Length: 448
Image 1 (cartoon, one colour):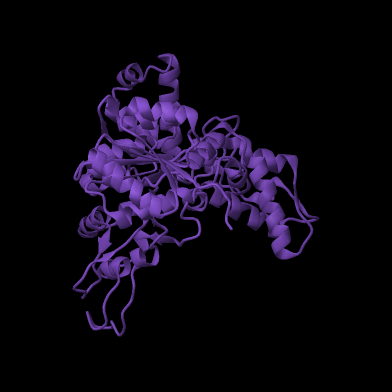
Image 2 (image 1 turned 135 degrees about the vertical axis):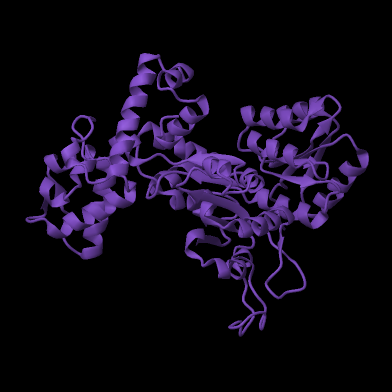
């Protein structure tokens, strides 16, 4: 006989018919329900009882569901909240996700979708233990990394689409995997796809699948990436590289939560969480009309920025030690040590390729060094990206014009900000930039 306590669900809606429908459906799932007709009753119940999930209507007689989401975020941030909105109220649903809601339902409530959402929410890990798991995979104790871990912890408990921005090699895919692995979809597929690596003529087939005989070479039915990720997460890396024609089809698949394979007659319902990333500035791509604005708003519900290695130089030593331990294990050789001058050289290097470049540099040095000691010369760092106490490289040492110009731009902007006590508007005027242009440069350089 099972004597374990039933999980408790709080239902908040002023319509008796909706409350009754939810109570009956959840009761059949062996869940205990508590109902409130308004915001005040809900807050009173939250004080008295511990709940495993809250379902709330957006419009309440004495407030809004958003107020309830914010109330719960302040007092019990690990309690998932799902918003029930009127059909077509996409903006409301997005606002709820940004405020911290787990997911949303639209009226009229579809019972299969309700059961799916509730089951997913109840699979969320309980409070505690998440940060430890993330720390083991995401190394570094610098303030930017501590902040990134906190954000991953929070976003893992949501179903909101996340746009992960950051430079090449900074670890965007690792961040996406951690969001997936710490959430309720952890036991389901994580499907990464490099959007820039798929030939344009094969994109529709790759994303949505195809039926046998639909085109030359289609010798059998093949599921697409959306079908492969069903129940889990689809990670769209370098999403800015998608051609406009494919962006339209992707937008429809996300909106309808259904795909039609090439040559198919029926749409297939898919349940995927979308995470995307790019090293480009998506907002700038929208302004240049290379990326659809409507797709941008669907993908960029929440933006998560991964810091560059330049912004967390204090983590370089810990990262280097980790890489060297892994190399020793992989090669079966004794672990190499970094000479203090080599470590200093690493800390003074700009790392345009970020963590990926650090790994490559150390792997090469691990092979070249003698007596298991990596000297500064073994690193073979590009002199154009080396600095002395943070100063710019001398022009005669520059071998990468783009990186050199970026370093000049960074120095001038920092100088203007310091002279204006970090007043961005005044700094922009001093540099004869529009405020929008200044904001774009700050974001690009990781200074926002």
